[in-house]
Amino acid sequence: MTERDTDTGAGSEAAESDAEHVRPHRSRTGQAAGDWLKRTTSKARLLLAKTIWILALLAALLLGLGALLIALKANPDNVLVATAVGAAEWLDGPFADVFRLESKAREALVNWGLAAVAYLIAGGILARLVRP
Image (cartoon, rainbow, N blue to C red; front, side, top):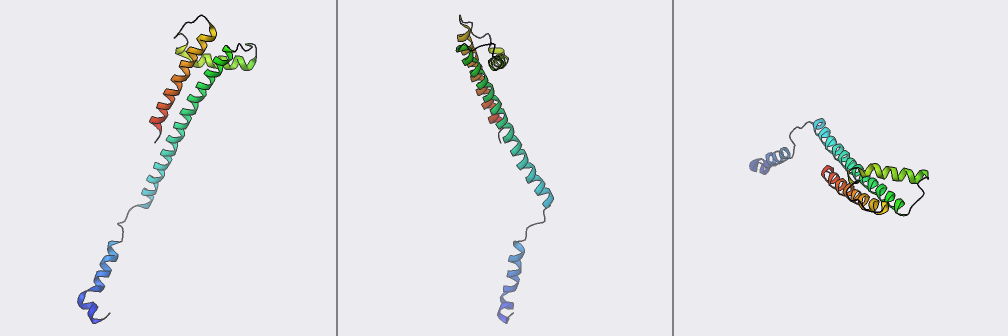
């Protein structure tokens, strides 16, 4: 160092500025664990929200398919038709007796259509509440 540096204290200022950039000691394992937990929780919530939405969508599709099969007067003895209509009847639950119409096809279209819309709305709301 020169005489001028010692007079102005430039060397000590450099040491002080280096000391300012040093971070206080933090537990890296605790911080890493916290970050990992946040990422994992966010991923799990996103996966749960997607699962809820997919289940609601599948329920609505099954109800729509069942109503369409009844409206088209598909063969009820067919295993696939019977399975689809049976699943739609099971999913219909509380919407089975909302409207009593003269035609079974119209009744299925209206009641199962309402149930499909209800599943989509409820699934969308639940998925939105769960999503991070």
